[in-house]
Image 1 (cartoon, rainbow, N blue to C red):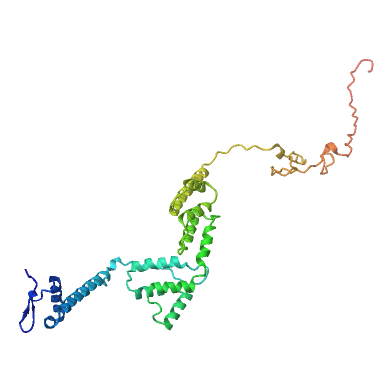
Image 2 (cartoon, rainbow, N blue to C red):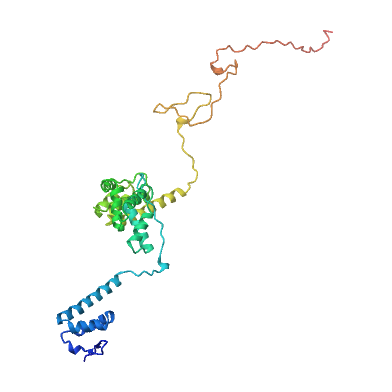
Length: 344
């Protein structure tokens, strides 16, 4: 039952597996594959001149080399790419200057996503892509290092480490941690407050804050109201769960307040204080118990004028001008005297 092929040389002499009983069937087949690569004459000479130990070592080394090549082909990505799967994402540029510069952890995450979407496999392509997204002082720094040493960025990981050493502020994570622990909502909306909390948590990566502390800081920093009261009673287990609950409660409160404002009440008579009534004629307006003069009426009083003397500032009842005297006129009327006979 020897189905293994025979090795034949140029002289026509065939070497059967039965002539080499010290070799197993697998080793004999490995030598046949080696003969296909090196040539039958080389293997024939090796089998006739070599020792049994050398025969076994040669077969085992060739099989080990085959396994290594197979593993390398399996792990190495194929150079042929499907262009329909490549997505070109926009990446923000990093300048490394100014107070509004991007945080390196967040920018590196953005770069990694873009590299994966573009299917950049080699380290050279990745470092060149990272280099193309630098600007300002960071770009000058990178090209200055490349001019001095062309192999200064062998991998993208080493380039990221050099960027951290050059542009990350000292004790930056400690500053972000203190800012996170003293977080307050203030005048921020709920969505802005959540985004601020998520940003601060993402900036702390070396020694991250535990989840219970993150939830406690977020809930404690909220403004007093229904949202904070609900989260205090609910006690969410994760920060994302707290974010979702806070957004739901904020939406409910905002919607209820908008519904109350939309209901227009019918006009009703408003009560008026007695002290707010002004007397006609320019009298002094009575004051309240606090001594403040009420001026609810916007109508200006008419000026007083005496109808007796015609002067302003007082009334006729208190006028000191003597009353005008009406002249007595005597009118004599002729009375008709009846005629009598005596007078005639």
